[in-house]
Image (cartoon, rainbow, N blue to C red; front, top):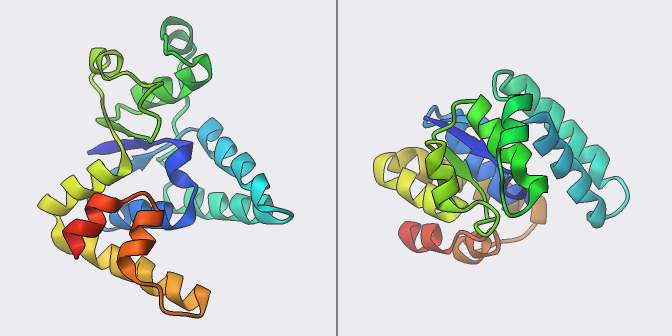
Length: 179
């Protein structure tokens, strides 16, 4: 299964680490475009000086880990597609170019289900996506969340309860499922 990950799910870190940790376990194949990665890098600027440099390093590591994940939208698709926000057309075009099965994004308003269905795509938010994956691959999702949770606690230098961590990552259903 091929999944296009929108920039809004690659940033913040905990969510990205869970999504990509599950992909690393072979549950799905992640896809993105160079423009999506660029949007992620630019979004980190709001975190302050040095954040963009760190994001670009993480992007380089992801690109090395998944060299086939980068897809380039076709010009014909970019011209023919319409979405409520024209700046998001490149995301849909990348999903089409990569033969994605799903688009994982928080941006429901700008990716109408009927428009995506016409292209053979399903839109899911990360919480829906990961909760559904848990039903079919419980060990992969549970083990990934556990590893990300452990890393977050080490980096924070304190105990971080799992449920609030997942809720902050906008994964409340997954938090309830794993509780």
